[in-house]
Image 1 (cartoon, rainbow, N blue to C red):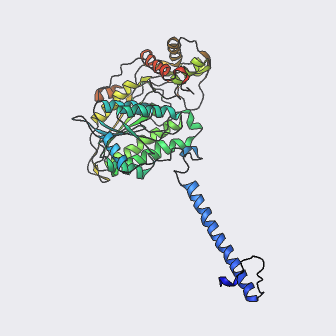
Image 2: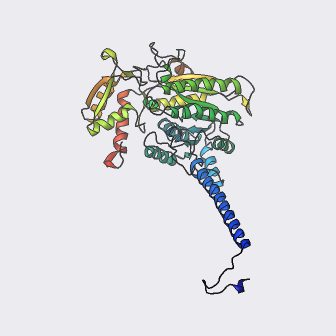
Image 3: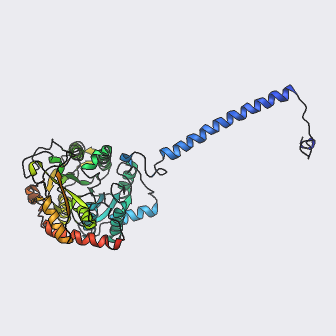
Length: 433
């Protein structure tokens, strides 16, 4: 047929025919239908790729779900690194998964465990609640110590299941959480996502693991809420939270009790009291007071009604780390297997504080002396945004059962923090926020 078509376009004249006309119209309709069909398929693929795939949308629009991304993981090289980091190198050591390892407390606990010969694998999602570069710097510090921090999310059940398949962890130190009292008013769902859903996701992985690990996790002194009785004791009521953050931590304690009761998980909750120190969190008062005093900015200092004192039981990071390690060392084995309980399991709650509340005004005075700069003060009423007037820990239970004995006063601890701060942010190399 091709030999009947002239080589010079335009000189060939097609005979008009009803058959040819109808056939051409049928082909035209057919082409349109095919084009429409494949257009829908293509648009569908675009929707799936850009809007459903977590890897193609690294920063979701909903800030409460900004941590829902698990980066590349798996493969022989990755598994080899995971096993190496989690390998026990001391005679009676433990193999611990530390969640929130690139966080403030997580970095210090991971370092302490590794230095004494324990196997440690870190896990962090590196979200942007505060400057991620500080978390990356902590990650680099851990890497030099020999701790591998895998990047992933505790809400990713497949990812967690893989970790427990690669390493039979004896312990889990769960420190991953959405922190901060005031931020809960801006982004409440992030607290439910991390502190409740994230905890359940982790406990689900632990109860199904074989062997089941013993779990120590970070609760908070904020669970004491509006209590007026001081010092706060583990036996005091915790049903009056003053913030959503506190409510999620209280909910976490109840959820932990449920998993202990049903599945035989060994669980220990540690109620931290205002932890401070080097590599700390920029959203904490001692941290941003230091930053703003050095920049000559006015700092807001809260006072209670009728010029009442606002005080905190500031606890230095090294003391908190000792309490965490003691809790891990005294944790009994979980009693379940394959998700089934075989007997009663250990369940504990401890306060980890300093037992010496210090007025916030005194904190500022100490910083002024250490920085050799006078603060520009703006004293204002304590806002109704979740902050409480005071915190004060009764640590007698932790002293008796964990041998917990805090030894760092605020003056000494802040001196160490300021030394680190000036070194880390020296020469304008890093922005302090």
